Amino acid sequence: MFVRVFEQKRNAYYRSMVYAVLGSGLEQQYIVLNPHTHCFELVDYLDDQSQSPRAFVDVIQSECSGFLAYHGAQMLKYKHFCKTNGYEFADIQDLKGYSEVLENSEFLADIFANKCVPFETCEIPEKAFPDAAQWNYILTQADGDAFMKQFSGFHDSILETVRYCEDGQSATAYAVFKNCEWSGAAELCFEGVQMVKIKLPALACFRNILDASLIIENESVFWADASLKKADESYDGSFIRALCLKWRKIS
Image 1: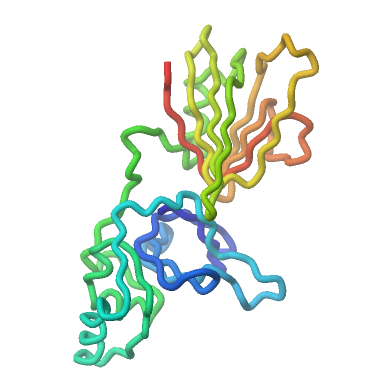
Image 2: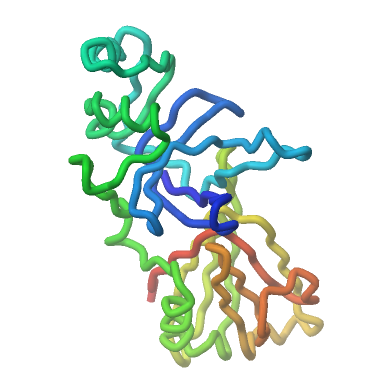
């Protein structure tokens, strides 16, 4: 599971794998790893202090392979640890996550009590993308610039197909671009989709893209079929805004 988190202290976002999820619905909390403080943090899903409630956590990838689920009696080990070590017991009814977290009662007690635990103080390994061998992730502008150079800036490429899907927590768009003369074909996977606009060319016989933009900012990505200086949702062409982008060569 991969998310974007809003950090109030910096008034900025960061992205993290999710190590555990507590509760359900609007009451959910997430255990994530802040790359700026290099600490595990317990963050609320919803900012219920603002006049207009907003989410602190945006789900990018909702897939939870490797997660275990603990309920009721399965939390007795943690409860016993709290009782014997002087921690206040947090009565957690639903907890799912990696075994390294769920089985680490000291870590659970610390993060429930303090909301923050330094990474180096606990024996929990940092998680990588489970599909990193199949996809190339674009997480920074440097990643985006390198891909644009490799794919010839989308010059003379054609948007062959777009497939959009939702799973209840996040939305994904798969776009296949063919640029046979220059760079072959590539599939781009936009995760945590926020907006998609596909505009057909004025002349049906002219589908070639002459130029494109790939802008990474605020831990999100903006692709457009024109050379833009900044992300612009008023642009009168095709564009996709999402929280994350990965790609792979398909020919």
